[in-house]
Length: 258
Image 1 (cartoon, rainbow, N blue to C red):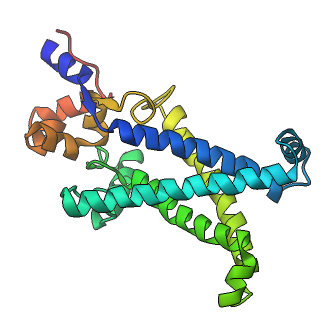
Image 2: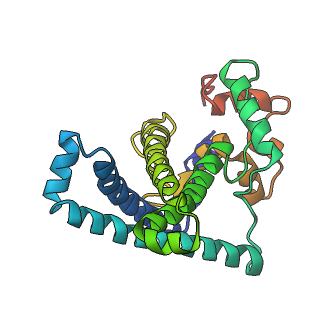
């Protein structure tokens, strides 16, 4: 029993300090872009007017928004560059690529939530929800960069491309911004702060870069099996008497007395 407790308390590194710094950069730039952008989009509200006035007026707000956008662009380009180098030169696994298993994992989790099966989906380094968020940020970020530059330099764009792209870029930029804001507030904040698995805060990507082994068993058993060099069945303890152990790990049964 004591060895099981030691294993559950073991910490496993999931994120390099560079990724933690990258996440803080995303928080800062997204916060500034959302504040300065949405206050311009919904300028008729008192809160928006208060933000604009306290940031030095509309001219200052526009400058903050544009130059923060440049920092955001640099961060996206750096992220893509690091990913390309890692995949091509350092043989990193393409762990963020969406596969058929992500769809089956989503179905397996729905079955688990409704009590049809007795275990959640067995996920690798990133589950389907994390991949959804990741690609939403990357694809949405690229869209915001392209439409933002179009709105910043409309005459240059109209000189080479149809002028109809300008109002189209404005609609895409504002609507994507609002969608991203709602996804972050409703989806990401819940998963990072209010979800029972991480409450009051998911420190793995914000502080330490580590998660507990117990959490790895529940959320990323495939990766844990690869790290520890054992079979997936040993991690999830599903065979024979292991079924009871798996239920204990997931809180469905009380731990037997020592």
